Structure formats: C-alpha cells, structure tokens
Length: 199
Image (tube, rainbow, N blue to C red; front, side, top):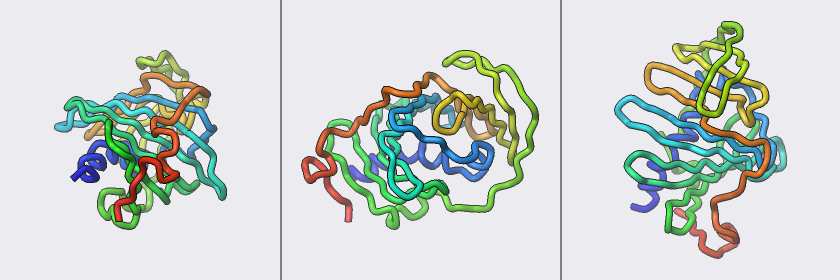
C-alpha cells in the first residue's frame, strides 16, 4: 500500500518531464550537481502540485541522479530519486513518503506508470518573448509542439523551462538556483540503513 501511495504522489513529476511533446521542446537536460528548480503544476481535474527537481549527483556513462520532491493540495508529500540517462530513460528509482522509509522500485515493474517512449512530434520555433512568472522576468525562446507551448531561458538550470502550457496542464517556474540543492533522502538510506526494496 505504501508503495502505491508513494508512486501516486511522486510519479506525476517524472511522467510530466518525460512526456514526448514537452521533452522534444526542452531538448537535452543539462544537469550540474546542486542545481535545482521549483515549479507549480496545475492540471485540470487534478488540482495543483509543487515539485522541486534537484540534480543531486553526477552518474557515470552520460547520466545523473535527480530528486523530484512533490507536495499536492491534498497534503501528500513525497520524493522520487531517479537515475536518468542522457536519452531521458529512467534506469533506477526510489521513492520516499514523508515519515516512512525509502523504497527502491524496480523500474521494469512500473509498467504503465512511466510514459512510453513514442516518437516526438516536430517542434515549431515561434521566436522570443519576455515572460513574467513567480521566479521573475525572463527573456525566453518560445516553441510549440503538439498543442504544448513552451517558454525556455538558457540561464534556468536543468531544462531551461520557465513556463509550459497545454490543454491538460500548465507549469510555471517558482524559484531556481545554480547551486545549493540538497537531497531530501536521509543519510545512509541506500546503504541498508532505512531503505527497502519492493521486489
């Protein structure tokens, strides 16, 4: 039961950033350990959620460790720690629900919880625009792909994402930092001290 609740609380963020339309408009992620971004995500019928994405460590062979800490309107808070390869594939995943132990989830058992890798539609470049969001005002490049409009700024860590809007949801940058991001997982969680595996 814990795993199901934790997955429900944390998988929406990884799934959002792996959507083919959004991924195509954002391009490759540029992680630097300690860099972080925080977004407000509004989804029709699902309410609002805040997600903070932190690059917590580099990984060998063109990958990085990301943490996505989320909190939604119903009060469920959780985090997912992901080993993400350069092509966007999630290789490993652990989840943490507030007050509970971290649990490693075998990625091959997630099934439809993670989005399938469909070919992405062509990206249409629309030019540039000044965009004001909670995090400030940014000079952005604007793109559209399959009904999703994306505003990006090179100075924003990870994907450069400032704002995105589709019929189903909107994403807005609340805050960001090029350094100072820290893990929300407890020390030693992956060394047999407070971690479990869902097998």
